[in-house]
Length: 283
Image 1 (cartoon, helix red, strand yellow):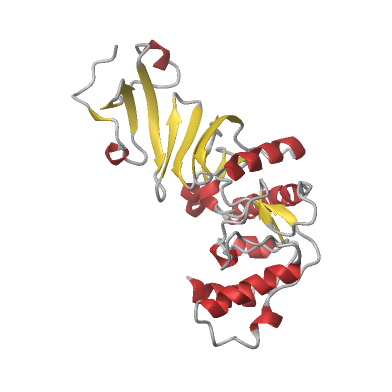
Image 2: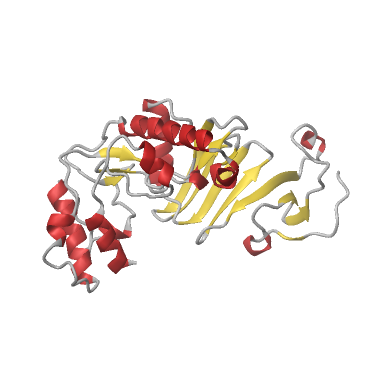
């Protein structure tokens, strides 16, 4: 057993993002720097090493024993686990492997998955040269293309989460209950317009229907492609895409704008003025 200082109760508020701990029973201790992947097996049977990765809005993400990741809490849905399973089944996109799930309700769950090796692109981006940045963006577009190739599992539905449940995008929240399925691009644009008016939008009241992008097809999408969700190795190669909670079937527009470099390398451009006008009112 490793000699560590006096611990604190194992509670979410006692976990700090980026810090590594030893959990013994229900007590947390700071993890000595001498403990690493090569010697953590020397810990006592009742001791576990984990790192607090993130605590976003009622959820907690932990790395366990240098090999597993768990995501739990409010907002962890079955759709996220299903998204990773679908990506693994139909593509070569590197994603966490789902080992175990448990959901006490539609919006409160637990996912145990493999750890994706590498470091976040978010922390490395500013140190990269132009050639490396362009390479990362082209790799990302290649992966997006693969993700879009995943076949829809729900015939007759134009937009939904990976498991067929309603999209989590606030832009598409239905004013009726239960939510109506979005069966076509017309349904989708009507929903956005309905939300826009409901939330007090007036500037584009007459123009918005024609400003919204149109598409006769829907594809699988990650929903939150951003540097924080892209893992890379020391050579600038993408090792994995993480955080699939917003994955869904949707029109093939890239709604994010995380970097001018993605714009430079984008294979297909979309006019998103209507989408952006709606979001300004809703958020």
